Length: 292
Image 1 (cartoon, rainbow, N blue to C red):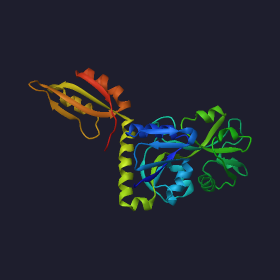
Image 2 (cartoon, rainbow, N blue to C red; image 1 turned 60 degrees about the horizontal axis):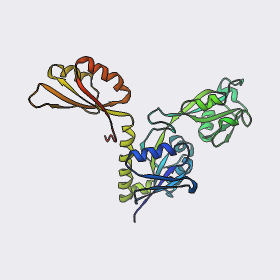
Image 3 (cartoon, rainbow, N blue to C red; image 1 turned 120 degrees about the horizontal axis):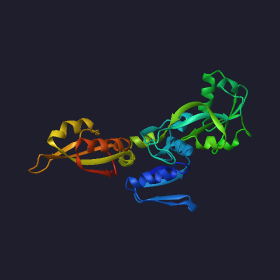
Image 4 (cartoon, rainbow, N blue to C red; image 1 turned 180 degrees about the horizontal axis):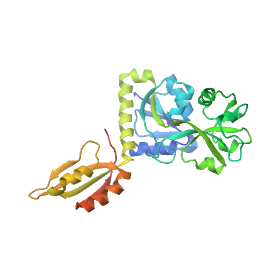
């Protein structure tokens, strides 16, 4: 049977990726003690691996596709097809991109990148770190480290270059951010030769649509309501939509049923304003997938 080999992240992104696949309609079963993951699509073979490994293995064609971090694509300078930006983190969907930061101990005398001259820096992304230092004409010793890197400072180094979403781990280890090197995000990538294969590309795109639809649905919610004809103009000016609201006139009545989609954060402001306008029968409902 034809299959694609898919690199499934095993680290911090693992649990959120499982949730994303489940939201997309796939039944995913993790056998943690066997380091194995089963999926109910016989045409997909999921291979658990660290995101750094996925990045290299997709480039080499050992994996046809997978999910990694944009920062590792840049740091390892791999040549892969970036299929879609999924933009989710270890704990939440839609919380903004993670950042790659340069951090030092709170009581450190290092207050600028120039103060790192001759110092030792532990980095999750050493090539990006060296390029950053070169840009600032600073010579320092850069040493690769794996996570967790925060507890290693200041025992094993003077500073650290690490991923952060909320900054909670940095604060817990009494580190302060000196600079932000870049933003990074989870990205669905594919091997270029696999992308050129008609069957594999179709399968990869099928998976892309399902994951992207489920991912976008995490940020949006639906709303339907009734509005009298005299309110239509004001309601339509107020309503956001991916394209345009759907409007249906109710039978033998001067009332319209309106259906639209909005971001969840917008809805908490939108519903009270719709009520103030005189709209009735307002119903908010969750979405499973949003396919643009």
